[in-house]
Length: 168
Image (tube, rainbow, N blue to C red):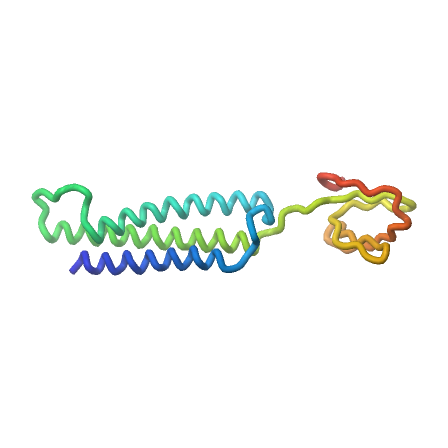
């Protein structure tokens, strides 16, 4: 009876982890290059930890479902039932933790800050701006400077150069 319950729990947890993986593929950014590098690193750490926790969970759930990997010697049914339930509880705890880390990684990928885009420095007659280019149309460059939109007439521009970062 105990092994049957453990096997059913194992299947349910497996389905939950598969659902989490499928959920992570449905929507979001195309890849981690679109996320701020610090957040992308955190996503990587969360995914590695989730994989490690899922591995421990799988081992524990298999132990609960199918017994230990060595022959049982002088073990009572009660002792084996207690051992099976302990492995089941351990597996469930690790599986839930892995599931939570997967959700954290997906959430950070979807909702984390964007990676810094290209920066340009625009100089000319009474112009000295540096920011993230947005669009150009009808001779006007739209630039985002410190989070604020700035429209620059391109006829007033002497030089546009790509820069790694804007001076403070």
